[in-house]
Image (cartoon, rainbow, N blue to C red; front, side, top):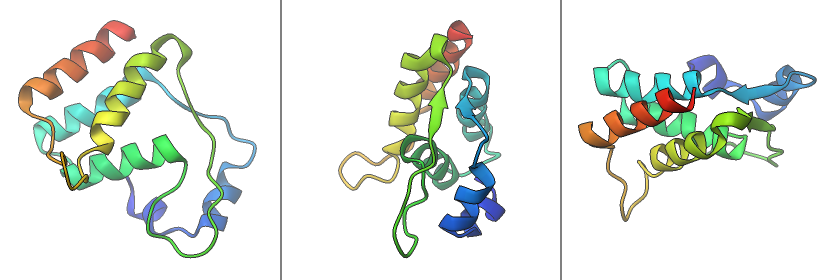
Length: 115
């Protein structure tokens, strides 16, 4: 998640997204576990991305929240949802560990086959 998005107000994000269809494709979702596996992003960044695309907003802001609609590529919806859900667990207190190398490999392979 870019610092510009993370630092933007809810109103600014809503204005920027107005009239723009936001769709997560399998190839875009794949880039997150690939970047996590290579060390290009930290687990916290993967968590922030997953949280945003799952809920439509970044947690921790102030004031009322109106989620931004983020859709998933129809043909790969189930796989994308599974990957987002797993990455969104990184920050959980109970089972909040980053995915293992095997889990990342499985995510990447499932997204490859869904594309």
